[in-house]
Length: 502
Image (cartoon, rainbow, N blue to C red; front, side):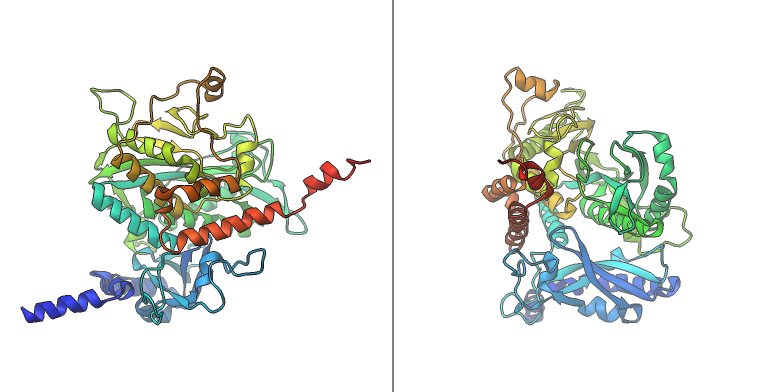
C-alpha cells in the first residue's frame, strides 16, 4: 500500500510538461515517427505552433535529432506567441526582453511529409512554460491557442459528452505580382461560379488539391467566387482541433503554390471594395459517439502518421431536427447553441473579424455581409443560418481568423447556451433588412475592431476561451493594431481633405 501511495505522489508531482511527454502511447508514436523518417528519407523537420494571430512559427531541426526533440522540445522566446511584434510605443507585445523561453513539445500524431519537398516534414507542437521558471515551471502555456483549444474541447466533452465537429469555407484570392513584387490585381475577373474563370486557375487549384491530399485534407468541392482571383476550396469537416490544423496546413500549402506560380496567396479579407470579401464560414455541429477512420487517398504507404489522415465518422448528430416536432428546425441542443452564439455574437466578432480590414467587409453594403445577430434557414442576411439539417453556419468570421481561438470561443458560447437553455427565438424567413424596416428589433454586430474589442472585454463567458495570459496578449495586440490605424494618415485622408479649403 505504501508503494502505491509513493507512486501516486510521484505522479502528482509531475509538471504538465513531464506528464505530457510521459503520456501513455506517446513513446510508441515517437518510434512510429522514426520509422516514417527512415522510410520516407526525411532529412529536416519543421517544429511549428500557432501565434495569437494565427501565424505559423517555430524552428527547423535535422531529423537525426527527432528523439531528443520529442523528449526535450525546442525553445523559443515567449514573445514568439505575439510574432515578436512591437506596439506603437516600441514595446514587445506580451513579453519583455527579460522573459524566459517557452518549451514546444512535438505532437507525433501530426507528423507529415511536405509534398513539395519530400526531404522535409512538419509536426505541430504543444507549448509549455520553461522548466526553470520560478513560478509554475513546466505548466501549460496559456498563450498557446492550439493547446488551449485541445483542453477546452476536452473539458466540454467531459461535461456534456459532446464533440464539436466543424468544417470551414476558406475563401482567399490569388493575386498577380507586379514588377515590384506587390499585388497587381486578381488573376481572374470577379465572376461568381464562372467555370471559365475557374479554369484559368486550374493549374493552381489542382496543385493545391494534390498537396492537400498528401497532407491529409479530404478535398470535397471548390468554385470561383465573386471577387478577383477568389477561390473557395473546401475539405471535409472533422473534430475541431484537426479542422483547425488542416486550415492552418491549407494556408501553408497555398503560400507554397503561390511561390511556385509567382503569385500572391492573399488571405486578407477585403483587398478590394465593391466586390465580396473573403470569408471563412464555419459549419458547426455537436456529436455523440462515432468512430475514427483513416483515409489513405490511394497512397500505398501514408506520407505521415495515421493521425494526420484520420477522420471522425458516424455517431449521433445532436443538431438534427426532432422529426415529430419539426422537419427542419434543429433539435433542442442545436437551438440552445444557436441561442448561445447569438447571446455572445458581439464578443465573438472580435475573434471572427479580428483585423481593422475585417470591418470593410461589414461596411461594404449590398454584399450579404452578416451584420445582424439573428438566425434563419438559408438566410444570408443573418449572422447564423441553418445551411442544412444537422448543422448551422456561423457567418461572422473571415479569412484572417485564428481558427483555434474561434473554435474555443464557439465552444464557450455553446456551453453557455446549453447550461442556460437559451432560446434563440423563431427563425427569420424574411430579408432581415426588410424585416427591420417593418419594425423588427435586432442587435447589430460591432462595426469596428475597437468596438468589437470593447464587447469582448465585457463578455466574461467568451473571455474564458482565452485563459491565463491569452486574453491580455490578444487584447494588447489587437488594441495596438486599432490604435495604429487611428493614428495613421492614409490616402483617403489626403484625397478627402487636401483641397478642402480654402
